[in-house]
Image 1 (tube, protein in one colour):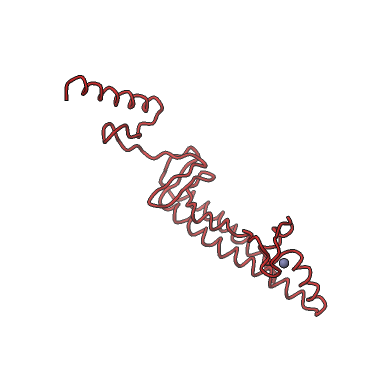
Image 2 (spheres, protein in one colour):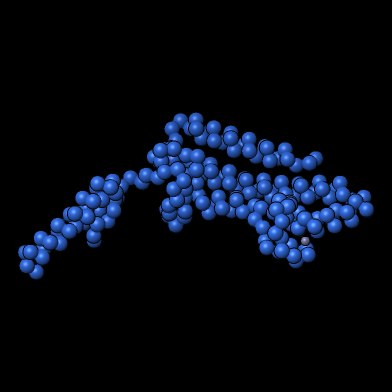
Length: 191
Ligand SMILES: [Zn+2]
């Protein structure tokens, strides 16, 4: 290798490195190992990143695991066809009623008319609602545990900086908020 080639390679790397510095991207790998230093992780609200094989984001300033969030959000997802009559559920009403009833709107009308005839509708509605609320509570408790576990380790501020909890005051607040959510759900049950 002659001197000129060597010089050329170095200057190329240097230019790339300078570019990264200007862009504030100091952790960017310019080329094999050269100039690479791991930066303190900085994440912003809404950003999605991977860490220890799991996906994370920051929502309302709190670091959250997306996989679990997705699971929580899945309540109320809609299959294409009604399991009872096998017709395509395309009405807006179908989307609204399916999570609680597990059938399309037309099927619910038929079924409830039949129950009314037999005087069994009150018990039916109560059970239906409580079943739905119970599944919400189950998911919510899972979500709660996850939130609290994460807050034990670190807290991500709105600006995206990772902070450890100090004094535990904020954690208590979070705990209280989550508990209130749980009470709200529990009160949705019909006694
Ligand atoms: Zn149906």
